[in-house]
Amino acid sequence: MSGNAMHNKASDGVSRRRFITGTSSILGGAILAGHASAAHAAPAQAQTAPIADAARVPALVIGTGYGGSVAALRLAQAGVDVHMIEMGMAWDTPGPDGKIFANTTKPDQRSYWLRTRTKQPLSNFLGFPIDKDIPRYTGILDAEEMGGIIVYQGRGVGGGSLVNGGMAVTPRRENFGAVLPSVNADEMYDVYYPRANSGLGVATVDPAWFDSVDCYQYARVGRKHAQRSGFPFVFVPDVYDWDYMKKEAAGTVPKSALDGEILYGNNYGKKSLQKTYIAQARDTGRVTISPLHKVTSVSPASGGGYTVVIDQLNTSGDTTATKSVTADRVFFAAGSVGTSKLLTRLKATGALPGLNGEIGKGWGDNGNVMCGRANHLWDPTGKVQSSIPCGGIDNWAAGGAFAEVAPLPTGIETYASFYLSITKTPHRAEFSWNAGAGRVDLNWQTAWKQTSIDAAKTIFDKINAKEGTIYRTDLFGTYKIWGDHLTYHPLGGAVLDKATDNYGRLHGYSGLYVIDGALIPGNTSVNPFVTITALAERNIEKIIATDL
Ligand code: FAE
Image 1: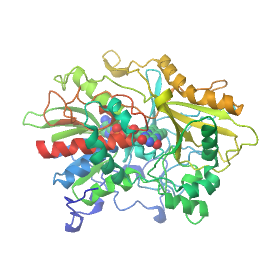
Image 2: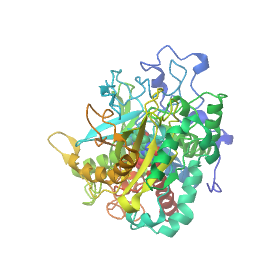
Image 3: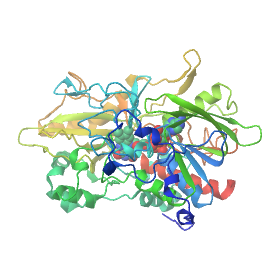
Image 4: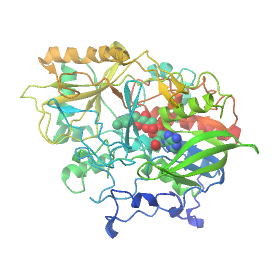
């Protein structure tokens, strides 16, 4: 990180306790009521002063994921006070089990955003459904069902960084032209990708350790099978603290990756945005966050700037107050789906009628498709599996697929190899306003996943033929090979250089910006968050230099 313009005001009396506001309601929530012992008391940043009604702020950021965190940090370092509005919780307070986050194998109310039943990406095991009832709560993982695709997203301070696998992949340079055609690749690879990787704390597993530990047996089996079929196996960098994982394996620290934590948060070793960009933003003393606050409207204010309407939520998801604040500048960083839904509705309902016709277009699923393979009994994948993937099979150039060798951390030997493939997909959906139903729809077609399945098959049909193995059919239903009902990687909906100019400034309104995954037109050839972060670094640098 450059850090040279850092304005650290923490020392001049702006306490960290002011940083995250509005979280006290968490302590009153169903799960935590009466259980927060002194040992589990909230960390210092929890506070009780959410953004005030009628406040005026220089910069308001909607969402606290990658795009929002980069914007907040860099604006603050340039001397601008920033307020971040986050619909999810702060995730800074342990539950009754002493941990902030729930384990993947034991989902509870912390696990899902306002659902009464879990919606696990792997819905079945040995053919049996594994979802279960949970209390409705503002939990961490949203399984949002839109037009026949389930879009998984993180909810809370840190956005997707709270729930993701931390795989931090820079696309191969030769593929970049197709990812962001209007962006100068030299600048990205010389300046902004390195800046993003450094800010995120990206590192690669120690290969010698990888070769020696039980918890990556599944990945070594994945490598062996890939290489025997002639596919390159590549180590994939991650934001997990690899030294911490070594200590987990040695049994000297509390476990998170080696205890199967991933989808519902990671209690120890993962460097989520809370520990990187947001921690740095906090240290400037210029950034405040209101969790459990949801932006519902943005429109031009009569005296200049924008009126932003915000619902304050309780942990049941009910609105407990509605506030109207004024912001000189507004950064849409609500994630691809959140930003696209907001902009589509605001354009259609007259709040921002001057947005152009590209709003809502160019949305894609990054070609995500999952599958498992059944190995022979002499090829076990291991009882203890690190939940952090560290390798992939690269067949992008020949077959349009990049497959992560993913864990199946069940605690028992499954003899299964499991993969999440990112594939080249031509299909793009569009968000539109459904006035009758009062909601935004997405015209995704379930049949569009076939091209992704075909691309993934270029890898796994060949491996199965070589190994004499078959696909697992018990992970996504009673006889279903492909996990083709979901995406972890929503991208697009307010595409760079179309809905916005080439730096994310929304056409039609000065002072409104998009700075998240909505800018990227549907496909990144690899996992997306490093590209989202690098693009945000590029755009905010230009915006600070020319607009402020
Ligand atoms: P995002 O991180 O989604 O942040 C948006 C934030 O805005 C969220 O915190 C929302 O709660 C909040 N929000 C939405 N609407 C509103 C509103 N109206 N008012 C206030 N707040 C709002 O956006 N990517 C990788 O590169 N590597 C991986 O290993 C990886 N694994 C993944 C695993 C899972 C299970 C999931 C779900 C995703 C994974 N991803 C991975 C994708 C990655 O997390 C995602 O691309 C980024 O988080 C998107 O970043 P954005 O800044 O666009």
